[in-house]
Amino acid sequence: MAHQPSSTSDVILYLLAIFIPPIPVFLKRGVHADLWINILLWVLGWIPGVLHAWYVISKYERPAMSTYRAAPVETVPPTTTTAPPMTSAYGTTGTAGTTTATAAPGARY
Image (cartoon, rainbow, N blue to C red; front, side, top):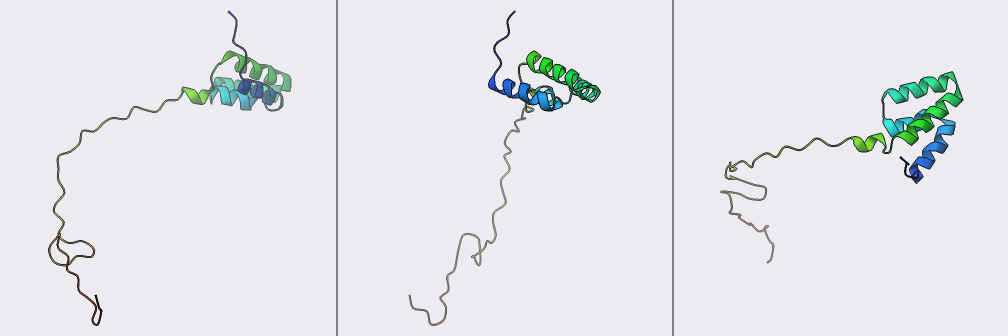
């Protein structure tokens, strides 16, 4: 069974694996056993770390972050409560809904 050609992001990961192999493995798999194996191989020798990183890049199709999905949001039915009537608000005096405007002394309208 033939694999599809590598995408542009995979080519970038292959090149990055030459310098720091654990970074592409982390981007492909996240914090899984593959990452810890790659870090161990990289510490023991650069070539085993690079080869393992190339294997992980070629084996897994998608980056690890795309496999995470948001939890479904539970819908809450609307409540039928009403707010109490407003007794006073900013700019009002007296009962709710009525405003009284007083002119400043000496003002002409």
